[in-house]
Amino acid sequence: MPAAVPSDMPPDNADAPELDPRRRRLLFRACHRGTKEADLMIGGFVTRHIAAFSEAELAEVESVLELPDVDLSDWLSGRREPPPHLRTPMLERMAIECGQPGAGLPPELRRP
Image (cartoon, rainbow, N blue to C red; front, side):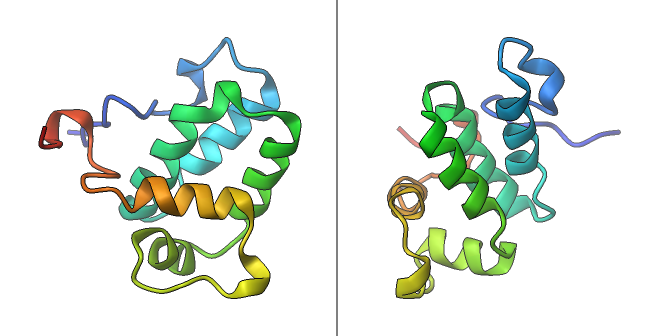
């Protein structure tokens, strides 16, 4: 039986037909990182914001998605600080949102 997909994350880009191809690709990449923790944190962030990102923000997200999952998970969860040369406005924005209590959890599992 397949694992349940959190309701705030589409299982693939087929659930986002209203998005242009670039946004659908980014959404897929963000939600399919390879580790569940990264899928939930990064995928959840991108899912919530993808439709409103400007072209410049899309480029920033693409750059963040090039970084290794192990490092991203540590930086976004606050376990480690990102190196100064990798700190971008998008990575900082993601770290702030992902550092909130319950970030990365499906809505049904979050505490009020």
